[in-house]
Image 1 (cartoon, each protein chain N blue to C red):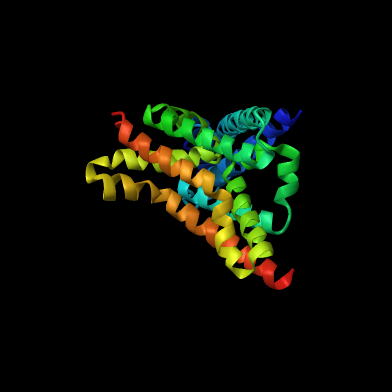
Image 2: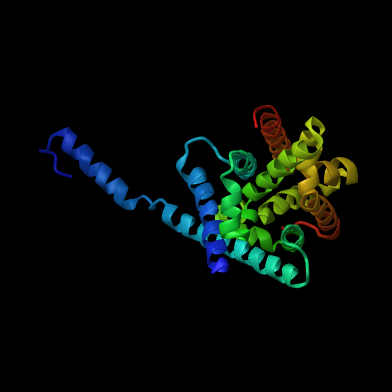
Length: 118
Length: 151
């Protein structure tokens, strides 16, 4: 059942992005989509709406980039709870560090190992 | 074309002809593809989380390991040129998942490797990831400060 929920919620996030790209007159590039979803995820997380979605849909909520925003926001808020104001600076990146480091390391290695097609 | 008709009606007929010939907006098809591919990537993510949990990781760590695995796969598929093919088919379905974030790092870094390891690969890795991190970190920081002052 969790798999079905993950599929549906993960798919719906992409539908929202596709509609934004196809229906708005402003030129919405993939960069705008990614930035918008991270920001939106962090805001939804801060007002307490995103964690329930993660509990309900698992990877359906954590795999889209909104989940990355959620991770950053919850990390920063958790940091504030533990360390005060300094935690607002350290908590976000600490929570998202594995994903960011993986993206930098694998991205760098892939860019070295492969040549673009065509 | 009938010359005896008023110009208004001729215009209407012309508009109907144009609408008939113009390609249908591919919206429904794009949305369907984005849903299926985006959903499948999330589904793979869920399989990975369950797999890592089965190997004894707590949920948070299993999630991080699943993300790292997806990022690895996306970097590999981008290098092989396969992710671009998926993206052409899936549109937003391949952009929104964390795999799209990884793709947005690898693709320009590969493209501009000729400009050197520092200003080519190193800088271009963050062409899109840079703005994503800027807005993500600032929003999270602001949310945490609001929480600090108004909880």
